[in-house]
Image 1 (cartoon, rainbow, N blue to C red):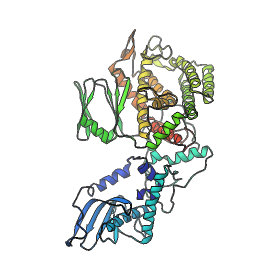
Image 2: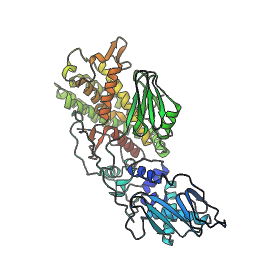
Image 3: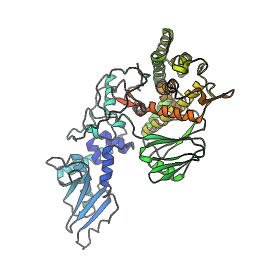
Image 4: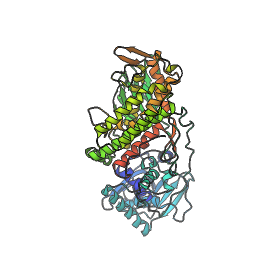
Length: 581
């Protein structure tokens, strides 16, 4: 905490007050370096013992009520006269007169003070830099001690205030920070600036900059929107640094085989079924999706909980039943703000207006770019409904505009079909219907929406929000209302586009459905191919119209969920919905 508050006060607050933590290459590398010293070794000898022989101790926890600090010391060595704490760090030793940057020196200073408080003679500390394999001596002088106590007091002050500090402005510290995708420093500053709010540099110490991070190539291998369904990207309003990774390297594990059993085998999930078997590595798994009567062992669940990997349960027909996960986000402050906003009719309607207007405009974009023989009347009506939605004064009024737009949009949905899919009698559609869907296209739409609401619930949970408490969709037993809210703007761009791609490319055919008087249902082979189409769509890169960088739709959901959280806490003036031209 001392290190973090001197590096960036917002980082300290996110990590220690709100419980946010995300790994990046530097944190994983740091854990590897600490692997040897994290092993429990011999304890510290009694400081009053007569034995003066040399000793070493690893992973030593010390606390002091008088100092008000606690710390785990990586390594302590004694020569019979005094002891020396050694802090392990990744990277090379910096070329500095003091031997290291202030956050690292203050962290080591706290360890020296703790050793002294417990009766051990300790004059200095050392930092071991693994890349250069050098140990640097750090002198503990009065100014460093004063700065260390100031950092302790400042961390307590920030945590007690309950207000997240402002993000740093154009700071190189953000480049290597593992929480940059949670903090969104440039995005928050841009959105505040667009609304005329002043920039705030109060979170920046500015006394020392920690440079030297490299910029890895974060461009994805795929072209953005290869089907042209998302339209041309809007020009960026301001150049932003690419601090958010464009894609998540982890992928979901879908288990559709009935009677399948998921067990744990080391760091792998082993899936055993009557006809198939396979495995998935836990570090590369984002979440697990079970359909129907698949079972999972308690050992596998425990391993998933330890890694915060959620498990989603669907019925065999694709109905989203629920999810289970470990402790999840510890950010209770955000959930309190979410509940307060839900109790405020003004805030609820303002957010609902944003969701509905963005959805109607994205529907209009999809139609404009893909429908054939479409007159200008419908496009004009959709634009008019979107404008009316932006000025609606109640949720029932909004639902009226949304329903009118949906009738026009789905009435023209068949005009976006191409090739054999548009032939009469192959995929006929008479508007939107559900529960159960009466034709194959509506069956695909319902299944696609279930997949998207699952991913929205995952993104909201990761951001610390409760997926069950929404603003446009009001709370109802078992309904992920906020996930339904968040997915509104992305229904046309992700779910509907996936349906069109699957049909126009022939990945799903008419023979993949069983249609009876009770409704239309997709057969297992067609469902498998459709899930693959959906996942490819989620991994497609798209240019964010506000921030200018390219990210996948899967990562976009997490960015939008974080921005919704920032809007709920008042850090940005309003939620910026994702829209394309």
